[in-house]
Amino acid sequence: MMQRKLGCKPAKTLPNQPRLSGLRMMARKAPARLIRDHIDPAPLMLGNDQLGNCTSVGIANHLRAIAALGGYQIDICTGDAVRFYSESTGYNPAVPGSDQGGVEVDVLSVASRTGYTLDSGWSYTPLWGSTDPHDRNALALIVSGMGAAYLGVQLTQADQSTGLWDTGRQGDNVPWGGHCLLLWDYSGLEDDDTVTLLTWGIKQKATWRWVKARITEAHGILWPQLKNPDGLYPTGDDIQHLMFNNRVFNG
Image 1: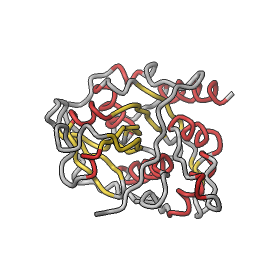
Image 2: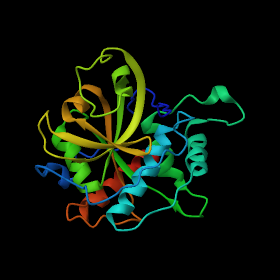
Image 3: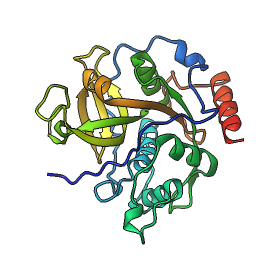
């Protein structure tokens, strides 16, 4: 069985935390389905088999997913993800006990202030905002308009199994722990419809019913340096609104 680490601490809310609710794009009705089988977001493990750095890896794989939508790719190595894990959580490779995972909003805060820097010399600074994790239309709008949704989930022992993730399987009531992953596409918006999650270097299928049962927080990430060619990508006033909210938050 593939080695898998977790690393997402319980969700929390910060003062002046950026929200997506004021964006015009969030007032739309989400597309009924969003299939991206023809696009490979190429998610990477980036050390999440050895460390609880999923919050850093989620940001890295979000960058790669947006690049894939534009028809290219960004080279990110394990060292990049581990370095940002240290910058955003205090992890020290010389102190094994410091591998304690991260809080998603804290990690996003650091990225929005200092950027996500790669060995290649490139540094990407995101804008971000949060939404109600149980608003399925909002989740679908983030995926369709911002490329992928950055989620926090509480996994159970059943989620160590291969195949489609759904509820009601053996071990479904036995807690495993918190994890950060990305929501990439969906076949529909009903409980039985499937979604594609990006985690542990693979594309994992799950039902919306599973997402509803596991999700604890949801965030949208926008990279001003990258362009999502999709027509639903936030533009104009939406970007300015998100920039303003991030400036207020970062002081």
